[in-house]
View (spheres, rainbow, N blue to C red):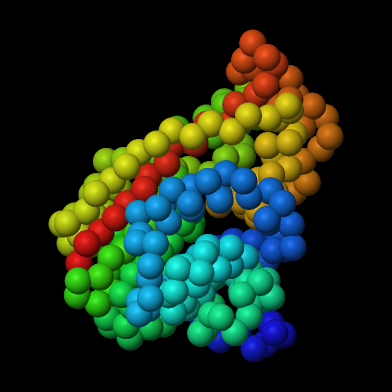
Length: 267
């Protein structure tokens, strides 16, 4: 598929920058996405193994890994992502087994009311300004009796990297993540009364802090809202590496801690 074949939708300026960052990472994403696959499989486990007859929206589909998993369970799948580059990569993976590849902003979904049985969205909503907005939209496009299942990151994620950078300069190098209380408020604001939340802490271990930062760049998650996009010098990276050693375990490995929210909304 040429990128022009994707159904386009307008996105705002900062979201365009986010989409560009993920688009650039489309070819490297899967190599660096072990954590993302872990979270997505935990979310997938909340769905029936047989999805035959279900129409499912994979919102923030990325390279289409979980779109393919949903297809294997028998679902009719629609892929949606902010990034045209990611959608192109998703179609290379899934081809005609997915019924539509749609560029979409989660806060303004270009779909009719109640047209999906399930909306699946893993680690995409943390890029939205206001969680209640995509929750309302996902609920709107889901049919009565359907389900919205999502995962997002919470405050405290990547605290080791954030603390290490804070000792070097005053700039923001790690994205802000919302609190669980803010998630609950967003659920209330979007009238999602029947819901269940699981809150696992997941730690990924690295030999060096540079490997963590390489993974973040490799999946396109190195875009930080409001940060100057100038190059980070080798000297700065060496300083981060030194500060990060504070967190090493007895085996010398460095942790990257993620606070994860897994949500199931029953309509």
